[in-house]
Each structure stands twice: as structure tokens, then as C-alpha cells.
Length: 316
Image (cartoon, rainbow, N blue to C red; front, side, top):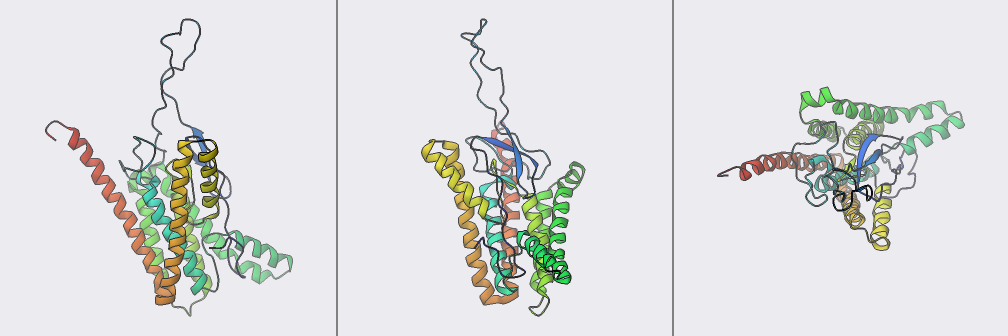
């Protein structure tokens, strides 16, 4: 999908903040593009001193496994393809990242074809077109871009509310709740006839994309975006360069992960475009099927996590 600003009413993409090349852990959200910050992996055990009698016993211990982020957004015990020996929450797994990228690419193709050349996943284009219209004193035209921006901001508020400790404890699976909400919104979008105002669909999809972007922000141990691809392309190439020049195994792993997500976004755009030509406005329901497969991953991983202690128990 082109990253250039589309036709009037369209949206372009925002880039993410660059990922760290070393093993990092995402922290709190920061910046206007939804990227999260990072902090170094915590080290366990005493550090080597090399002086004052430390010789022979002061070797540094290895790093502890990456700690799971607070907030309870993930299903418990989900197994993900991260670093060696690491057990990842499902919402950080590459498998789920690929499914969400399929949805992101498909929705961009859907809105571009069926709703007047609009990319509804990001709001850069809306903000720019609002400013241009205001500069020309076309006030009503400028205000016409505001609902999608407000819907996007509302999606961020919903996602952040789901991550609050009390809310997450009550819901138990806030990430799953976010995906169910996405399915409901997209099911409603598929019922809206082609004769309805395009702005109505744009607002709903902007809200849904914001919830997805704000809820699922980490691919294993690095910030990514499942609804846009510019930052993922940069991260894939940046890590590929570090893998070749710096001979970094972590960078090689991240390059593979980001390449898989970028290819999934492309596949989603192809499939979403083809289905929209075939089914029209109802093609958006295919995204509901993909999200349902993502929910099935949470159920599968939770069952597998329960079986592991049973297998390790006496007589298990």
C-alpha cells in the first residue's frame, strides 16, 4: 500500500519510533505515533567486580528472561516464538502479529476501493487535509475531517481503559475483549450499504484501527504497528543491516519477524482488495474471520499453558 497521502479525504501513515538493536523490553506508551518506550532487560545476580578479592567468584550472571509487561493485556502462559526459552503472552507473539497485519492491510484496501480512495487506519492525512482546508478558509470542509480524528482518539481511550489494572482484572482477558470489540464494529460496517456516507464507515474503522493499534503494540520484544507498514518496513531493513554488518543474532530474529509482518500486511491488502471487488461492502466480514482465528490462538495457548504443569507433575 502506498505511503503517500491519498486522494482528498484519505489518510497517510505515521512512522514508528526506531526499535532498539539490543534486547529490550517495551515500557509505557510515549509519543504521538503510539510507539512505546523501552528499558533494558534486567540483570539478575551480582555483577563481576574483578577487584578486591572478587577474582575466581565474581563472574557476571546471565540475563534473566524478559519480564512480561504489566497491564494484563495478554492471555496467561501463551507460548510465543521469542528468544530461546522465553514464554510469551499471546498478544506479543509473531503468529498474532501476522493475523493482525492481515486485518490492517485488508481494511486499508477495503476502504480505498469501496469508500472513495480513503485509508482509514491512520490519521496523518486527515490532520493535514484539515489544516489545508482551514488555511483556505474552507471551514466546513476542515470540520469534515474532524470526526475520524475524534473516533481515533476515542479508540485510544478505550484501549487504555482496558489496560487499567482494575479493568483488566475484572475483564480477565482485555486483549480478547478488544478483539471481540473489533469484530462487532466490523460486523456493523459490513451491514452499512454502499449508498451510505463514506464518512460513517471511515469513523468506525478509524475507531477500530485505533483500538487494535493501541492494544497490540509489541512484537515479541520490539515496538511494531499492525495497522500501518512504514515503520515495520524500516525496522525490517534496520535489523537486517545490523544482522549482516553487526552479526547480531537478535537483529536477525527481529528482521525475520518484521519481514513476516510486512508480507502479511501485503497479503492482507491483496486479499482485501480482491474480496472487495467480489463481495463489495460485505468483504469486511473476512476480517472478522481472521480476528476470530486470533481469538482461537488465545484459547489454544491457554490450554497448552495448563497442560505444561500437568505434564511436569508426578505421574503426569
